[in-house]
Image (cartoon, rainbow, N blue to C red; front, side, top):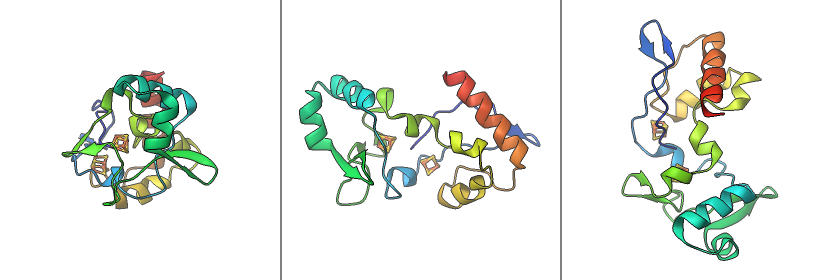
Length: 140
Ligand code: SF4
Ligand code: SF4
């Protein structure tokens, strides 16, 4: 999920995350969850009725609604190396890579780094958690 997180998280003088705009996080993995409120927000943004939006752009995964994928595996809203719904993209996409679950298990940062070239590896867990808290506060 190409992220525009401000460069507020620095370790030893370098940002711990800098998006390379590769789009890898918009492809595959477990899908992008969307809440009812997010469906309504995105549907409004693209000028579509929420029920129609759900049928056309969403699918169920593990009992939860996710955005559908193109045949290429990319999210249905990934287009020309950009997110077509950037201003209203789901919370998952807005928070990446400073996701809440890192507050519980910061070791996931290393796993995430193996999938996302923008994430700097070898960052101490406490630094990762401080950054997550800081980003979540900024976005609250
Ligand atoms: S909504 Fe946008 S940022 Fe999120 S997965 Fe789809 S294309 Fe990527
Ligand atoms: S995988 Fe990482 S570097 Fe690539 S677009 Fe997503 S957030 Fe940016």
